[in-house]
Length: 231
Image (cartoon, rainbow, N blue to C red; front, side, top):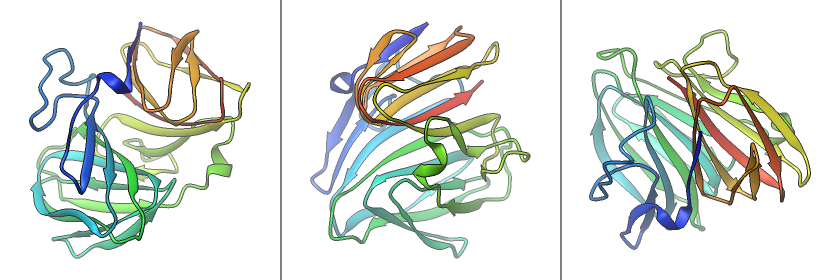
């Protein structure tokens, strides 16, 4: 099953400094048919104006992954961490017992990003934060693991039985991904247009996938892909 959620159908709100689209129910957007996808709870498509951002606010017991599409985001938290994450790179925060953080676009251009929340497997864990550069050249024509609950993966660590993956495809290229029984995937092209097992998907659309043992993705235009594989 592949359920396409067109970008035009997403909920959201425009706050001036923040133009946010929500793949799942979030804040004032509520759709009982889009509460979550397995352990995946939030996938927000955010545009953050230059010299603005989210002031300090708390989280607990959630794995929060930020994939920067353009521009950069600067993070600061109550654990003493501070770091700048640029386009194509990833940061993760395991909120655990509780943490306050701020996310600001200190750049002179709009920053665009995906913020992804995955339900934790370890409630009450010690909070943590990390970031890493992921050159797009390393994921040409294949999925690379960006964040994972499996410590054997060479990726950022999260406290969840889930993987966040990224790939780039040139127009006409394909890749195949095996989805284990009982698991679900959610895929969004940051840019480009693709077909997933023959089903069309445009830039910033979402595809909720289950009961597909193999997923073959073919690029109809140069594409940058982000996908979550989880229970």
